[in-house]
Image 1 (cartoon, rainbow, N blue to C red):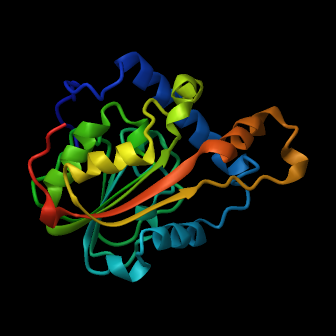
Image 2 (spheres, one colour):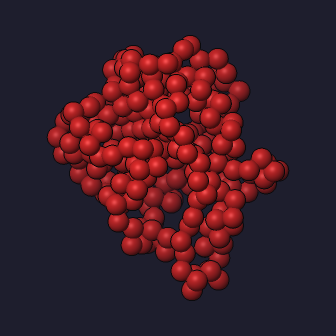
Image 3 (cartoon, one colour):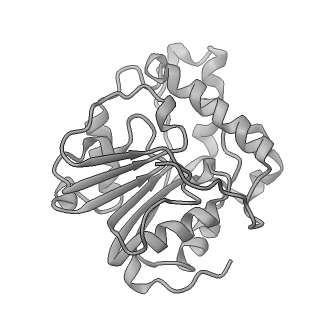
Length: 245
């Protein structure tokens, strides 16, 4: 669905040059993800079931809902919610991904930015944004948009990778994430827009077989295993107020 371009106005936005470089890295990763040692034997439905448990959520929680997935990628949660009433897939790179699983039932695929969702206010029952905000041009604008399109009483499932504050001088090494947050900073951003109903931060684990530890392509995962966490937030639109960032 074509729509007007987004021009960042918030201080949270990175430069367009930086963000475009991130888009190229995203496409490169997704073009070969299934051949990488970390993901080669990944059972995707089982992976999503485990991730939903971190939110205190189950597959049944989507039944009969209009569900939005912002930054869904080619194997996002939305692709496995066959029992949702309607599904809306949104990703800036959607037309360039190789779709891994055809969607069933009522679904809409929209190539759009999370910072400017082409959806009406209060039109979605549940919005998921999983490991996408840290990759966006302007995460604050995307959070505002997710809050805008959620129905009163609607649910947001938000997850990002979070990092210790002492690592800040080295954030630049992580090229695919233009934004880095501590768990506390991310929670504070969400609280400005939603009422938090569930919160969990856990250490991220990248299970590589020891035989792969000497491979240069795996060194970044070994380093990340030492410092990266994942923060999961289940939030409610019922307590939303006008954002102020």
